[in-house]
Length: 280
Image 1 (tube, helix red, strand yellow):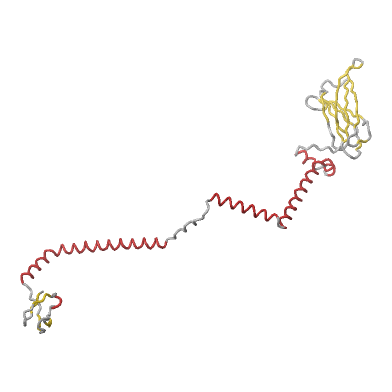
Image 2: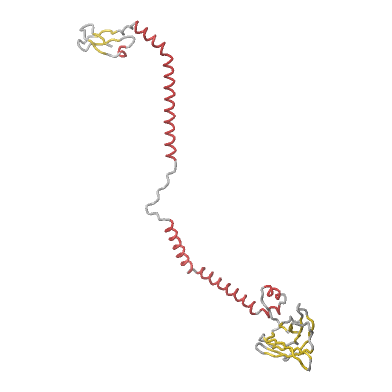
């Protein structure tokens, strides 16, 4: 608005808010006199136009204000979402960067194996490690000795503990508890004075380092099914035998049974017999 000094007619451009609705006292900068400036009177035509504009645009203004409010709410929500995302990103753990001198897995495993090998070599020199090795070797030697003793000394073991015979048989190990065996079994069919004679010959072999009493020998003839059809005994040619000694037996049977197809030798007596079979 423009005000004019009533004393010197100097005009000034001032804002309406500087005068206000009640007016105010002002001083002229030119003549240094003051006066009471009143607020400007309202223009009736302007007031009527403003009232008409306000009546017509009131609905549109309301809609514009609602749209502005919605737009402002959307902007506020978007800004809040951005702030939340930034806060979550700041709180998330940041993976530690790999050190510049990090090794690849293959090299790391190779170094671990080398370290384990060096540690084992160092542990081998410790007293407890040496004691454990000695104990393991002692147990192994004792186990090997036990197995060898059970195998090589199976005959004395079975003589001492007869129930072990079944265990050795289940393992497929032959046990000779008599200490004697047969070797070189031979059979011949001869004609003597027009009659058929069966000649049987074999050697008795000593197996035991101790002197073993030689029992009589049982000669059995068997049929095709393995059943005994005839048997007889032959006196031992020697009283005792030790390992490596041999004694030969010879026996003949006139008119052997026609169904006899096999011959079997065994030692008589209560002890388990060692048998040797052959064809007639």
